[in-house]
Image 1 (cartoon, one colour):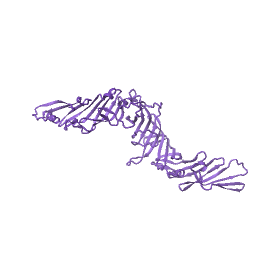
Image 2 (image 1 turned 135 degrees about the horizontal axis):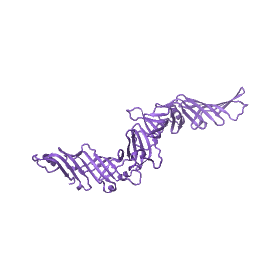
Image 3 (image 1 turned 45 degrees about the horizontal axis):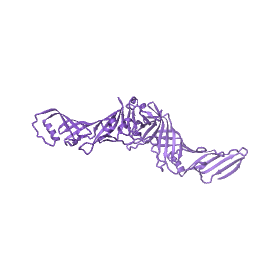
Image 4 (image 1 turned 180 degrees about the vertical axis):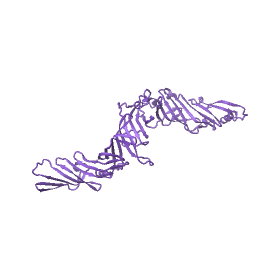
Length: 507
């Protein structure tokens, strides 16, 4: 450091300057100043307990310099400031590059950064305050920029009493912008926050804003996320507090852990930096949570081993329809109904209206004699306290052709319904207590109805059919289609009002 002292008109002028660059200036790590100068005028007759200097310096940003001015005291206090009329994103990038020799990730959202002030002061080090900030159409108050190894962060209150994003009103709003480091591959995220009032409950929420992934749709998408506060955090939030219709049912003791209100503008919405579990998020308003175990589900799936199933609830909500309660397993889960029947990956649903019911939704593959590929049915299994019953519809549109290899002319369906009955106490030993098909039947020109009950012992399995209003020729044609022995066609002199047929596929 060099200095110069000059006496003039009874005052003494002291000037000092730093040779070259001053690294870690004023003890601020990675802050480098150029052309640092100190100037002071003093009266030799006055007490000199503390000396205060005017300070000037240059701060380099991306091959350009800005001028800093302030003061420095021998007591250790110092303050330097500089003002930008228009900082913009490039200016923020330059500030970050000065400290970490890296660039920031470009945001997806339109961010305008106008006037800003740089301050270097004792106790706070380097700070950058933004005075003109806009995010899309929303204007923010002054905000402080923090520069760190992870990138640049900026938080500011939104002007006005409330922020409205589409039909969601957020009170006491603020914006939090996290500029990621390009070299590290971290994205820049924009999150609004504040308080949302929904169904008489107030939530502290975050709002993640991002560019739409749909190339056909221009503009921004958003996701609102807010946690419920449970009176008993260990037990969680009672589901019946949200859905009073579950009171006095077998589901009245269900509780939610990590319950959150989520409002999304698109399916499979992004959450950004918001704290969340791996919930399946759909467009609209929903409550997502980890659900306490359902004893009936443990019984039917056979996983009651003292471990939680980790079921995830998605409760979609609308002002007119109320809640739609869907429950998902954390990983694809199937179960064996018995007699070689296995389901698709299943999900659960609580059906409201009248008496609430718990259902398993999925599909079932049913192996049958004379067919390589099993029949596939859509499955709807209703779970009661002690028993369960299922209905299902054949998924193949053309019906079941040549059942059990009886005849190529024989078609069961296309409407073919599955019926299953389960008693929990005997299910894992004996399988279903009832299992069969009901549907239409067609052979040649003859149309009727059929019923088939599946038994453990094949010889007990019986296919019964009922056909109405057919003549003798129809009956002979029917017999010739299912019998290897041809029957001669007699005169058509007899009509039948109703014919019942019985066949044992096992012979």
